[in-house]
Image (cartoon, rainbow, N blue to C red; front, side, top):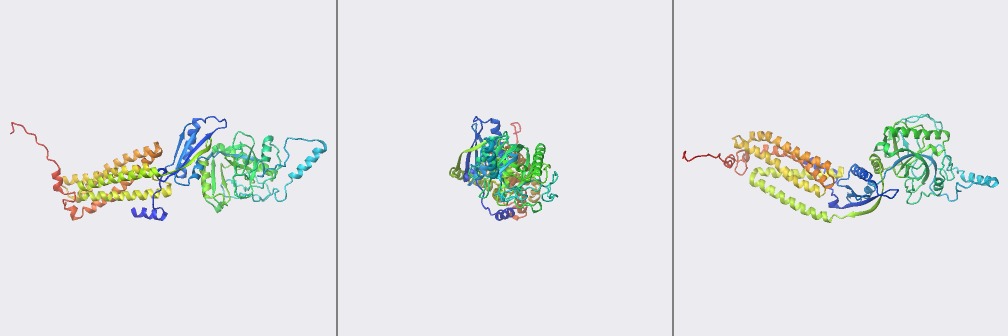
Length: 576
C-alpha cells in the first residue's frame, strides 16, 4: 500500500502537503451587505448568505476555508493559500440569474446625437424631423439584420438551447413549428441606436439606453438587477476587445431560483459543442415559464426575423451573459444550456458559472469592505511548538513500548512508522485532488491519534501474552489472541470514528479540521493493524528468537508467569 500511495504521489507531482491559512497564509476579505433602503439587512438573509457562501466554498473543493458572520451586516471569508482573490470574488458573487425577453439592442456606444423621445412637432417641422430620424435610423448594409449573424465580440456560437442533439428539420429562412428539440440559436446582429421602441412605455429607460456607454470599465447599470422593474437597460459582460452590445430588456420571465441544477460539461462534438458549456435543469414552474418566454420570442422571430424581441437574454448580476435568438420553436423540455466560444467559455469559467447557479443566488448584494493577505509567521511558530510536543510524545511512547514489550515493542514502533507514512501520503494526495490543506487543528488531531494507534497494538499484545500465560504455544496463541483482540479493536475504532464523524458535521472551522484528522487516522489505524501488525507478529512467531520465548523478546513464558501475582491465601491464628 505504501508503494501504491508513493507512486500516486510521484505521478501527481506534489511531494509536500498543502498548508492551511494559519500555516501558509492566505486571503481574508470582509463583505458588507447593502440594501436599497440603506437599513440593516435582515438576520435571516444574512444567515442564508453565509450558508450559500459555505456551499460554494465546499463546491470549489477549498479546504480549511471559513465563512462567518460578523456583526449585523458583515461576512468575513478566510481562504488559505496565496492568489485566492478569484475564489473570494466568486464566493461573494450575487449570482442573481434572470431570463428576460429583449426589446431593443444596439452597439454599446452612447448615441448623444439621438433625439430624446419626449419632444413632438407638427406640420413641416414634424415631417422634416421624421425624415431625419428615418435617415439616421436606417442601418448600414454591414449591420442590417440577416439570417446569419455577424461577429460581435463574443462569438456567435454562444447560445441558449435544449440539450438534445437532433438538428432542426426546417430549411433556412422557413419558420419551424414549436418543438422541444434543439433550436438552431444564434446571437443576431445588434441594431443601431434609434431602433424601434414599440411596446416600451418607459421614456426614462429609452433615454438611459441611448446615453449608456458599455465600453467603460464598470458596465454595471443601476437597477439592471432589480426583478421588480418592468424594463431595464443592461450591457454585455466585459469583453477584451471586440464589439459590446447594450439592451433594453422586458420583465423577468424566469428567476434563477427556478434552476434546480447546473453542471459544467466538456466539449462534445456530437452536440456541436466546441467549448465547455453549462447544462441547466429547471424546476417544474421554471420549466413552464421558460417554455412561455421562448414561445413568445419565437412568435416575434416568425413575424420579423430581424426583430430583437426574438431574443431571450440570460442576465447574471445585471449583465447579459448571452442573448440568443429563438429560431426553431419554444424550449419546453425543462432543460437548457449556456455555451460560448472556446476563448471565453473555458473550463474554469464554466465550472464557476455552474457553481454559482447550482448553489443559488445570494439574497443580498455585497461589496468588499476590505481584503488582506494573511501572514503565516504566527502559525509557523505554533507549528514548531506542536511538532516538538508531538516528537516528545512519540519518543515517550516508543521508549515505553521497548521497555515493557522488549522485542515485541519493535513491532509497535514499525507499525507507528508505517501509519505515519500512510498518513503523510494520504494528506499529500488529498491536498492535490480534493483541496485538503493541513492546518494546526489537523496536526493536533494527528498527534492525538498516536495514542489511538498505540492502543490497538497494546490490546493485541496483551491478548497474546494472556494466551502464553495460560500455557499455550506461541504460534497458535497468535491466531487465538487475534480473534479476541480484533473485535475489541474494531469496536474501539468504530466509536472513535463515529465521534469524529459527528464532530465533523456539527462543528465548523478548526474543530471540524481536528475531527477530520482524527477520523482519517482511525481508518489508517485499522488498515495498519489488520494488514501489517498482525501479519508481522505471525511471521516473527516462526523465528527462534520469538518462538522459543527469548527473555528479550517480550514473550518469555517464565517471565510472564512470574509477572502474574500468586493468589492471596488467607489464614487465621487457629490454623497456625
